Image (cartoon, rainbow, N blue to C red; front, side, top):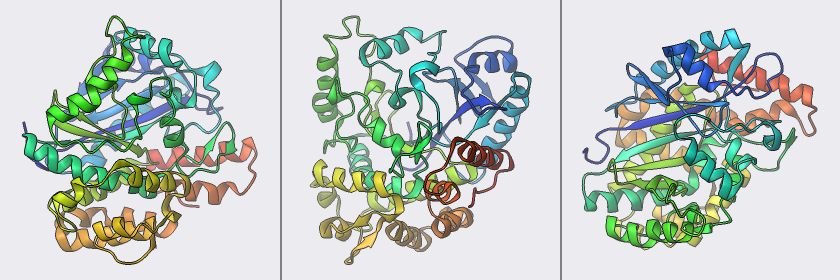
Length: 408
């Protein structure tokens, strides 16, 4: 059990594709078997562990134990990425970064993980039908932040709710699906927020409800989900707290809140820089640097959802004109979401220079050249063909191996 901002857990998801065609390659089980000699759900390689996900073309890398600093994490992830790539060479495979495959057809190319945990995945597939982008074509970064008691949970949950709507403006990286430009900077979140419409309480409005204790959370969120699931899940396979699909979910089994809406980037050096900015912003909010805890708790979900819908559509260019929200951030002027992040990063430099300084080069590049989506779109042009899409995403996959920011 850790106190607020004492430790951090980071998870990164990557898709595996054919090196020649960039089509998804469902070999995660074979990759893990090659790494350790048998098919397992998870293997720990010192500080970083590898594990499976719902589908066979995705592998997750995560910190084996919570860490007290982010400063060396990107390099650890990068070393493991290079290790994985060396193993994938024998399958003519490669890791492809980015939160969505640009031309995958999930109706024909989705393959569920067939080993341990398969009953869980089969239950999801039976109830929701996982042959869609909202299930089969999503790669993200998760950040786990700890709390030690109800008072800390209250403070953390209140702060996260206010920062969540802004996150796509920093990390949006999914402008392409089905081989065409979607019109969304963060199309991953657009399909994610609608993937459980059969049981709407599972995802809710993505922005969590204003509940600020474990008992309230159980009563108003988790128990409602379990009740709604019951007609479809009589064996209670899915009635666990991880079935909650909001943008940030409480994990009471490990006393943490998991932020789930961050698009995976082209290199872990960008991912961890974004994580540092998000954690820093949440921490400043939790410590009431901009507005009081009482004010944070008063925010209903609807106005936060409205801002969130703008940022998944327009990314850093989304206009933030809600005067109450701007005031809660310490601002009194209308601005873009990208400008708001610039302001928050400046405040972080004043607040904790040691925390944010190592990540400023990556954050500056994102500020100058735009989110990953903006950079991808700049390369693709207005009506790219499949050849141009493949060329662009192949170049992006090189950024993953070199550890460099993808630029147009």
